[in-house]
Every structure is written in C-alpha cells, then in structure tokens.
Amino acid sequence: MPRAYGRPRPTRRHHPVTQAGGCEDDTAILGIGDTSSLSTLGILFPHARLAARVLRTRTNTRTGASNTETVYAVTSLSWDQVTTARLAQLIRGHWAIENAVHHVRDTTYDEDRSQVRTGSGPRVMATLRNVAIGIIRTRHASPNVAATSRSLGRRTHQLLACLDHGQITPVTTASTLN
Image 1 (cartoon, rainbow, N blue to C red):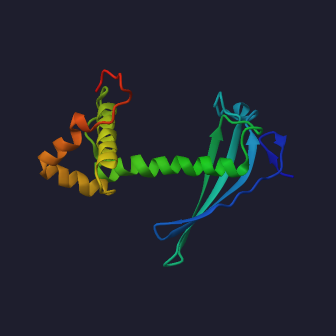
Image 2: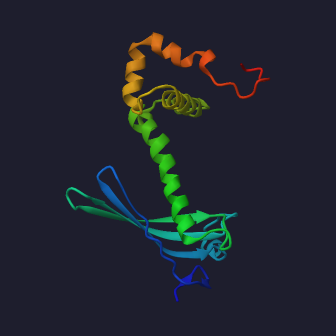
Image 3: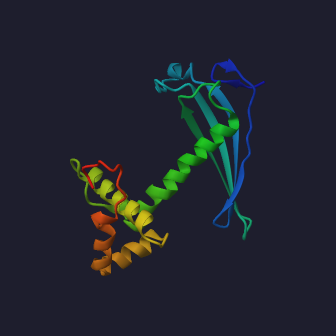
C-alpha cells in the first residue's frame, strides 16, 4: 500500500478515455492523499484537504504520436466528499473552462500579447473579451467566435442588433433592467 502525504492510503486509479479533435486522452489518477503534511514541506494551501497526482496521455489518432504529462491537483474536498471518478471529472471540467474561455481569449483576441499591463486595465480588458465571447455564443448562430468577431467587426448593423437591449431575456417580470 503506497504512502500518500503522511498517511497510508491505497492508490486509487481512474481511467476515463475520451476522444476529441483527432486525439484520444487517457487520464489516470495515480495517487490521492490527504494534505496534512504539506505544510511541513513548505507548501501552504490552508484549505486543501486532498492532493492528487494525475498522469495524462494524449494520443493523436491519425499519427499514433503520444504525449504524456504529470500534473498535480489540490482540492478542499475530503475523502468522504469525492470519489476518484468524481475527482477526474472535476479536473476535466477545469480544462473545459480553460478551453472554452481562456483558449479563445488567447487565440482569437491575442490576449497574451496585450500591451495593457497596469492598474485595472488588464482585468477590464479580460472582462470585455469575456462579454464579447458570451454575446457571440448566446446570440449568434455560428459557434466559431473568431469568424463571428471578424464578421461583426465589418458589419456594425449586425453588431448593434446583437447588443440590442430588447433582445435580452428579462430576469424577472418586475426587473428594472428591462
């Protein structure tokens, strides 16, 4: 039985294999342990209760080439609140957010090369990019944010139609924002 962060625990494994974009992902949770001894190692996560070591293998289904990486996850959930399968699902959900929002901001709006670096400017620009992505995804038929951004940039009447306040679904019938 392996030792996990100061307390003996059995190694738990979970292997969800998914396919997307011509790749097959195999995620294996190799070990989960409590974090009670992490502070003695100088790792300070005050609300952390569990840590996991995750091995990801991504294989290109066309070429057969594979890439393996080891990542670590820390959570405030306890042994009683999470199973290995649920932890794998939560970790994968984190990457779904990364791919849905941050990747689009990085590639479509070239956020990494932004010159805005001081004060609240970076946060304001990130918020504006998130609003633009949200409007495109909720009010436009095309799922391609980059193509839709380019199209709306040339067709201001369509852009204004997307922003039209009358198209916003009221939160409540008594809302003052309607």
